[in-house]
Length: 369
Image (cartoon, rainbow, N blue to C red; front, side):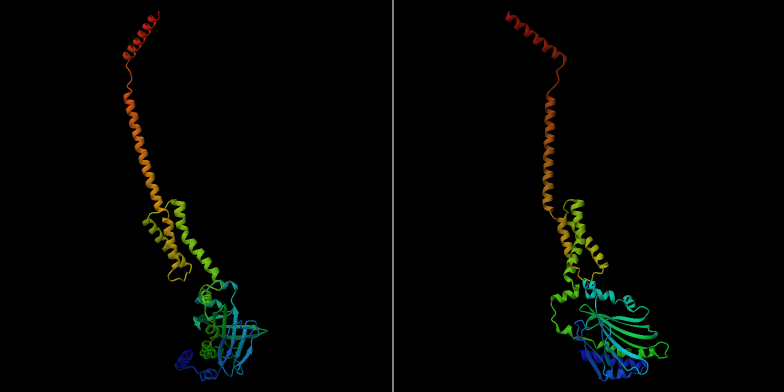
């Protein structure tokens, strides 16, 4: 299947070259005719455990990289004053990037604006696009730069292939260079070599990817980063903390009582929508937002918790107040009745009573004598 795709790509490039009027280079002709060599990084001390293979024209020379992250340098004949070569590099990603998934990293690194910032200082970005290599997120860019070393100034046109895999940034830098102001047609020669450089980039195969058994840990690492356990815990705390804060505050700090069914549903629906907008604005890649769905369910039960008991208490209190109100009213009525029976005595009645009491006292004194 891979061989068939490669042949199709090669045929498209040949047609494009024919239609554009560009002549094929001898290196491109050799590559298309099958005169190519495959290089494997397996076992190389600078490969950092990565095993990839790359094809290049057989007559090119191969040299060991002189710098820490340069695995190999593949170079064509430079007898005409033009240097045509490809450099294979494998770099460790910074430690903090292990907290993020490959998708998040690629979104940050390979956006159109980010690609313009990747080029070295002093270089000029020409064009670039996001793509994939063996299913891994990556990009290619073309830029031009002039570099000076020990008084020698060199002009280079470069096509850079790069992609992420297993915590590494793997690069293939193909270029055409010459001494600045030497009169060499560097740009024109680079344009002729671009099809070959693309074919070399397309020949990359990640052998580790197809040999190792992919388990749950690998899937989670790819999705959430190498420290996926920490990421999942932090994500859960962040999502549930923000999602449950409004119902908790409303239930226990503001209302201080349960909420009835319809208001609770309206409350949950409004804050689900607000949370969806909030997490989408933060760059959430979830298509279903299942976490927010469960947060909404939990919010509903928080708002409704204790509703039946609350209703019973309200009804009991209402009945108690009704009974107490009736009792108080009855007491008032009884008091009024008592007061109505206790009629005040007139002045004549008081005098009569005093006269009777005086007569009784006189009779009692006479009997005593």
